Amino acid sequence: MSDRTNDKRKHEIRKFIASSGWADAQIESFPGDASSRRYFRLSRGADVAVLMDAPRGAEMPAEPEGASAADRAALGYNALARLAGPEPAAFACVSNELVIRGFSAPKILTADFDQGLLLLEDFGQGVYAKVIAADPQMEAPLYKAAVECLAEIYRSSFPALMCFRDASWRVRAYDEVALLTETHLFLDWYAADKGVDISDDARASWDDIWSGLFSVLSAHAPGLALRDFHAENLFWLPERASVAKVGLIDFQDGLFVHPAYDLVSFLEDARRDVSVDLVDPLISQFFDQAKLSDEPTFRRAYAVLGAQRNAKILGIFVRLAERDGKPSYRELIPRVHAHFVKNLSGAEFAPLRDWFAAHLPGELS
Image (cartoon, rainbow, N blue to C red; front, top):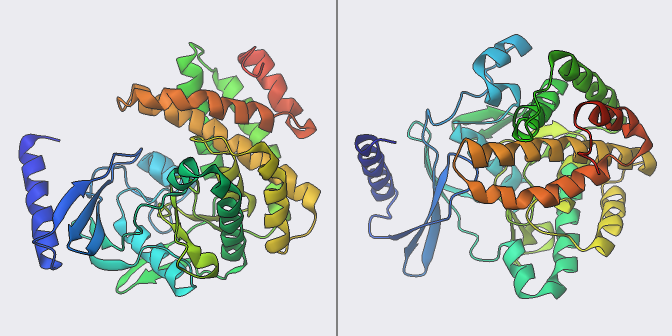
């Protein structure tokens, strides 16, 4: 961002803050994450709020209504993977629909969608990862609460067209185009980082194998997945009741998909090791509380979505390190790689293991 553009953005932010009644607030920036968005905490005496800065044009466009797969490919990765990209209305609309149903998503205090600026309710300092780091005995109760929340989200009815005031946002299905597109990050970035150029024939075989694996995802009805559900995107709000004790953020890219998606995202966290003795009971807890049937098939879908997600994350972390100048993400790769290797241990993954033996030998050892 040029100095002139940066000064212009600062002026827009100051104007928005003033128009929202927070002109005298102290402003503190949050550490950056993997997106183009920035966050600031505003404090004014005992009052606090969070400013989301999501400038329009900072990312490739989201998928427009009625776009074909070819249209999505022409628009780029955000449209292919069905990411919200530069559309702040996505966050506001999904948040509003969650709040209406009794979940703790940040309430939208004020919004300027044209400028890409939102003022949000502040959930405070109780980030799951930090609460557990300070008191490891809290891991089990916090994880059980979050899994109960996920099951309740799955059992809730959400419209595809979500609204906040005059804004609307269509939440789409996590279709095969999006699922496959995300696995391509592994080929384009992770494999390339290993010095391997994957041929067109190998890519076609990769896609065929994954398409076969994805067939298990139709065994259970889809539900809303927030799509980045992990311990640094959750807040512990013990003063609230029931599932509202779990504060939810970073859900603007949410889609409708098999109910195992957010569960495996949570339990196979890229940033922290979940206690091994908790994982299997938590999977069963979700299965029971979501009122699902056929647990063996559910667990196969869990493994497939874990493999898909971890393949994507391996590629994303290399991309963040190499393209975006964020080398610290490389430190997380060994944990994600371990998850990925474990995902691929089941019998249904034999064709994918054979693919690795032919094109990336030794990668799964």
